[in-house]
Length: 417
Image: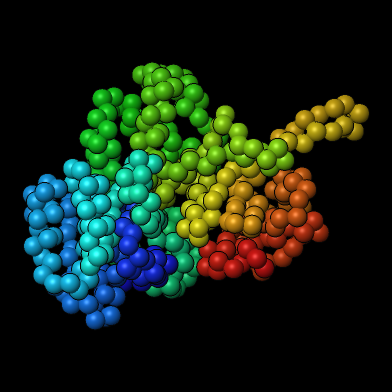
C-alpha cells in the first residue's frame, strides 16, 4: 500500500539544492526510510535524475556496517561521484556513524553534493549539532500516519477505521496487516525488540526493571498532569523499587529523545507564563502506547485526546496544556479561587485556538462542564470543543465551535469554520 505523504515530500523537494543538509527525524518505523528511499527517490527519477546520481545507503543494514566508519563512508561516496553533475546523497539512520557531523560538514563544501539524512534520536538535532552544521541544517520531522492519510487510501466506514486507528495507531507497516492478532503481535514485538532494546542499550540503563515500570506508568497516564517527583512517588506508593526524582527525569528525557513520548507544558493563559510544576506526556503513536500496556487499557476518552494532540502537531502547531485561574465571590459572598484546565492551547504565528476534547456531550450539564474553562478565558481567540459524535459543526450561545471528530481529523480547515 503506497501512501504519498505529500506534506513531507514537498519539504524535501523545496529544499533541493539549497546548500543545506536535509534532516528527516522521527520515531523509528514511522516512514522516514520510505520517504527518502521510495517517495523522494521516485520523484528524482521522474525528474530525470539518473540512478547513478542517487546514492542510497541504509546504515542500519548489517551489509553496510563497514560504512559506519566515517572515513570508509566518505571514501565510498567519493568513489561514486564521477562527474560535476549533482549527486543526491541519501543516508538512512546516520547516527550510526561515529563522527557523522564531520562527514556531513565535509559535503557542505562540495557544490554538486545534495545531502539528505534520517535519524531516530532527538539528540541528533541538539543545539551543539546545529552549531556544528553552522546553521545549515533543515529538519523535516515525521510523525506516524494520520487518520486522514490512512482514510485517503483505505476509505470505507469512518467509525470502523477509527476503532482500528485508536487501537493500532498509524505506523505504516501496521496498515498492511489484516488481522487484530497480526497487528498486535507486530506492535508488541516492535516495542520490545526495537524501541525498548534501543533505549536501554543506547543509554546504558542499569535499572532495566524500573525503567520498564516507568514506561508502563507513563503509558497509563496519558492526559494526567505529572512530573518526575509525582512519578517517583508513584513508584514508592505501589511498592516498587525506589527511583529518585532525578533518575525519573533522566528516563523521561530518554523516552522523549527517542520520540516515544512528547511533553506538553502547562501554560497560564491569563498570566501568560509557563508553569513548570506539572506537565502532560502524550505518546507519538497510540498503537505503540497500547502495545506497552498489552492492549489492556482502551479508554477512548484519553486516547482521543492523545490523537487530537498528535494531529495538531502534524499540522505544524505548537501545543500546550492551558490553565485558567478564576477568582471571585460566590453566592455566599465568600472569596474563592478556582482552576480550570484547557486541554490544548494551540499556536501558529498570530493564530491561537483553545481546544477541548470531549467524547460526548449528551446534555446541557455536560456542555456546561466541558465549556467552563473556555468561557472563562475572556480573549477573542477561537474556542473549540471536539466531540466524538457525528454532528454538523455548530456554535454555542457563548461563541464556542462544537466540531465532530471526523470533521476535525479529515479537514484541516474545519477549526476555522
